[in-house]
Image (cartoon, rainbow, N blue to C red; front, top):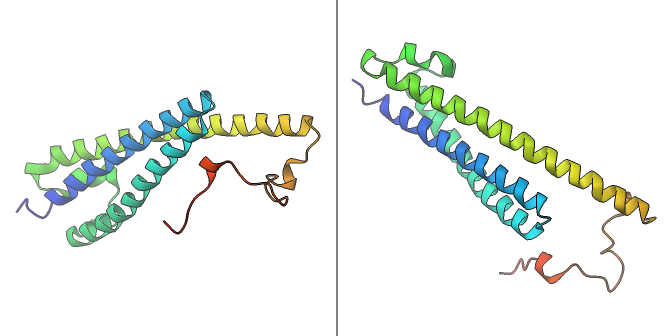
Length: 157
């Protein structure tokens, strides 16, 4: 009887793990920004994108499992009330773990966003003080001016 409910609990744990990973990446972004390390920031963004793509797959799996369990309209906070008694405590713990992971991720992500925005504003001020209009573009549009080698991508690869 518990069998159809167990995969959903496993999915909730997996989602919590992905959110924890994203929270760690947000902290790495803050460190990279603080160290003015664009290459490290780029690497973190790549890792973050991979996790984001895996979350899309988990979302599809989540919808399917909820439909199978007929729990599509049940909020996460009420999940344990719709589980068999033998799994109710486990469902409550999984839901609370996921909610906690999400709150932690949101805090880290907001801090990373604020750090990035602050640094972008500082860059704009420096550019403006140098007499350049930041809205004019990157400056790589002029003939013969190319971005640094480590900022190029070979799309044929």
